[in-house]
Amino acid sequence: MSSIGRNLRTDYLQANEVFHRPYQQVLIVFVIIIAALIPAVSSNFFVHLLNLSFLAAIGALGLMLLTGFCGQISLGHAAFLAIGGFTTVILIVHVGAPFIVVVPASALSGALLGFIVGLPSLRFRGVYLAISTLAMHYAIIFLATFYQTKFGQAATAGIPIPDPTIGPFTLSGDREWYYLLLVLLALLTAGCVNLVRTRPGRAWMAIRDRDIAAETFGVNLARYKLLAFVVSSSLASMSGSLLAYYSNVVTVEKYTLDLAVIYVAMVIVGGMGSILGALLGALFITLLPFGIDALFDYLPREWRFGSTLFGVQVGAVGVCIIVFLLFEPKGLAEIWRRAETYFDRWPFRYRPLESARR
Amino acid sequence: MSLKVEQLTLRFGGLTALNNVSLGAEQRELVAIVGPNGAGKTALLNCINGVYRPCTGSIRLDESDLTTIPVDRIALAGVGRVFQHAELFPHMTVTENLLVGRHLLMHTGIFSGALYFGRARRDEREARKAVERIIDFVELYRYRDVPAANLPYGVQKLVGVARALALDPKLLLLDEPSTGLMREEKENFARFLLRMRHELNMAILWVEHDMQMVTDLADRIVVLNYGEVIADGAPEDVRQLPKVIEAYIGSGERALAPAN
Image 1 (cartoon, chains in turn brown, orange):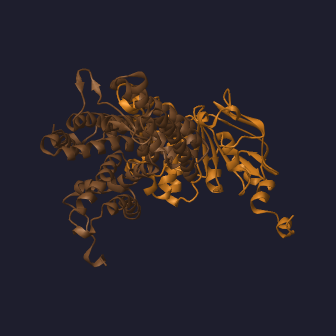
Image 2 (cartoon, chains in turn brown, orange):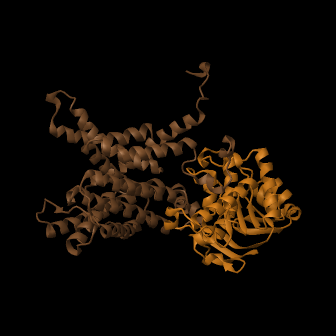
Image 3 (spheres, rainbow over the protein chains, first blue to last red):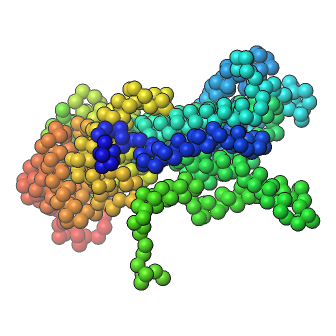
């Protein structure tokens, strides 16, 4: 086929392709190869960090669909993670269910709860909806605390969880986990990308942009808002369940309001309304505190206080939100998009006239 | 295909927005609705569209009574709506806007959408084919992949029309589609309007202020004033009626009389 022929579209579906630029197809293959090779060349700790960001990315994908695409603000994401974690505990302790059953069951219980948490969205918008999800957060955390004090060995220690087994294999090392999470994240990302380029995703975006117009074109607002909550919370719950297995412990102290805000930060920093943004945001916000930790090592000894480090780590997330909202409101995904359009036109770059520059 | 609005009354508290309004539209008929500001033109469209629920009266499209159908199902009955200020989905491209217009004619659900396989692909391909035909019809090729918010106003209004056409409507409700357009854009729009009337087999209710355009294009004119139909007939007849002239320009005595 000639080089011109490759750029002509012969099928309507070609307009809906994700990697429509030729170099993008090359790039994604490279990304996959590099991702597959990372555990072979990097330290255990770095693989551990990537595992944490993959887990965060699964949750961030959920919040991105809900907030970035459907426009429903939620501060309940930590609660959904908690539901995943505690469903995992309950199923292991009381039922003895295997990993293969527990993770989907956690996603399912998250979906059920997402339906309930989503109900206020039929009446409330914006800040009021955020407050109602916040109320749900505290209700769920209360239930989780109740469970933990009743069934946990000690009120503060949390509930231990054994390493999961799939058939004859036991997942224990960071490297085994890395490949499992990588494949799972890739599949879930593909699913989300497909959702937002077909009918349900467009319905969500229409609700986000102009709900009354969407309704007159037959988008059932209640149905699609609830669907967004259900999909979002089941992804978060799945992430929570996997995190419980990965860290071998479930404790209610992890699921603070801070965590919910950190997920909102991922979505904002990554870029609202972009699946790529959810991945980039999760990676960025997860690695940020560790990056600050590493920077602290370069400081003179007398400045290095253990107590200030934590404050700086938390504060940095807040600073990131503000900086991105001010200077790059569409987030990391927009920086990526600009780079792509730059190379689309390269080397014929638009440059303002010398005389017009002032 | 026919629309029959019978004895429609709409009140907001003590204010009667529509009083005993009856009108109809047949297939391939371009019915213009004119009247001064606040006469109830948009309110009438909103009633047909299900955004407002009338207090009394019926709205029949063929066999279905639109006053009893939920808002999001009215499009399924074949009613396409073009809003006065376009009301596009600003962060979506023109193609995506049109695909949302086709929402009810598609079937992809949450699971088949996530898998994007088999039926979902077929569904998507057919929808895009239909949407491309409409883009072709209203000559929007240049703007296919442009986010709606970045379009000039005149183009936005045209995209609004295209989005309504995307659901293959039996009845098209146009709310001041040519207001704010430039001369050339208006002439273009008149051409599309005639093509829609002659080629797409739909009834069109067209709210419009430009009397020149209305008398040139419409098959029938309905004049509303203070929520009541004061004239209904062929353009050349309606334009001559003293009642209509009075409603539009006012009579000498009334203009000088103290308010109320």
